[in-house]
Length: 397
Image (cartoon, rainbow, N blue to C red):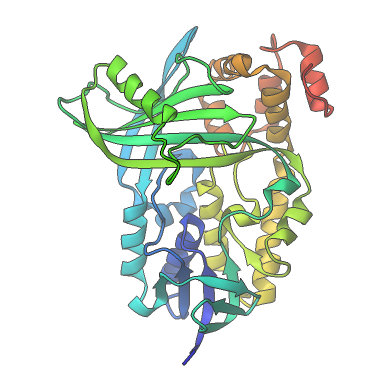
């Protein structure tokens, strides 16, 4: 017989955003009855999230500190005409760690994995098995809303983790290696040294389409060109690999514009939202971790955790964040519409010649007026007429 499950806060979606909210509430509001509902069998899925220390405010670092699996003090970038090592603390979190920390922080009955959600309202969640959660407030963190309402480019990637036959010589990550062939837009390879004999290598594309060519079950085709390029990259660097121990792939939005309010409502009107569903991602990188941390800490401090109060809190935070990031969306228009696909790397190559502090603030979404002026001054890496046409809404000829 279907059950009614009462609680204070129900979090729908056990990805990064939902997991961080659950942890923040468990730490700061231990008296609350919190439930986190996830359709798969684990919290966090199959992901490796990375961030710079400066992406997270000092007052919020308590939230991510227990999750960190790897850390480095510097990273490298490489372009055809420019290579550089930047000193900056850089960290990675594995989804398995998020799952373990959430389960340790919450009572066992609060982590409701393997439970499919049919519908969510400001104060209720209907499950596919007939059970119903009745909460004082509901937060929906189930992936994205209707992305067709936004003007987007795409960052798509395939990453493989390898056990090596011999130790590698890397002392830190290669966050961006654009010396590779430029295919399907701006292409770079991202490498994390997880141990002396473990590497995570990801092939990334800033592409005009979200199409990610992976083997399709039932088609009889095992073609996997992006994974093949990852293996070729490892071989070219002399890293003798065994079979991949883990794979990760995905497609992230790169925002150039769109109707924020329509996007918000597409995810469910009057329901509080978090993560991609709230439109909380960096317009240029597509990364959502810094915003997810900020929102989770904000929710944990909130005095009104009712359905209506949470909706107002999350909507207003997301709207302020969207409005504050118009500069990044303008840059994305230049990247995708002023530069031809095989020229896009020049824009990033020029960017990485700038002051390291500017680069850190850019990734954190905290660029100053001086930063913005510096990014736009000097010799442009694309023709000025095409840049102006892109900013004003046109597309390259």
